[in-house]
Length: 120
Length: 108
Image (cartoon, rainbow over all chains, first blue to last red; front, top):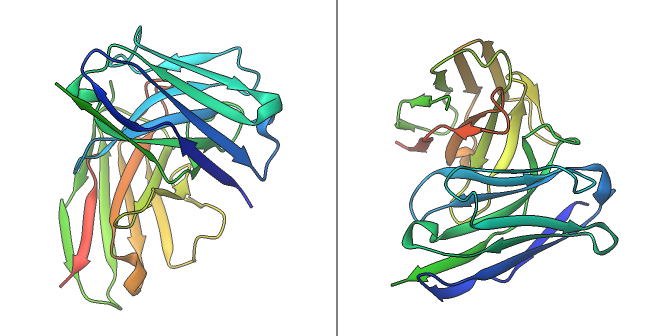
């Protein structure tokens, strides 16, 4: 059974930093791309970032480019999202998601989400 | 970026009825179009990929169709657990993938 467990969410002041983690189990982790997708309160879904299975390829939405860094530790089955220069628009539930393949850019399985609240 | 438009915004139906949801893309996405279901308080779940293929474990009452710019998600005979928000997502322009704003299916 595929399981994704996010952690690291919380409250942070505007301009601050936070690191999210997502521990995966139930599949061959290094064979799949992993992504972060966020959802602002009461709003729709927004793709944030994706990393290839080997970690060699990373992709970012324009809204977070230069501020967020995605990385992975394959021996630990963990993907990270390092977030800096946070602003109110970054307040959201951040979901970790498993790609259906190496870099298909769809989201086959999702974690339960980590809430990030940025206050001024 | 490719913009996805979903209609209607809200669909009010009774259990047992058929739901027909639309997703339109601002330019062709071929069949790189997926559908997700999000129940209240839960994470989204992949329903359909490549426009018409059901994801693992998805019941046969869900079906998808379309190509190019116009897509449809059909739910035959709504079950109580199907009342949720449904999002379409295109990945034709990867990595710049985008989601539609969602269609809420609620109880009439």
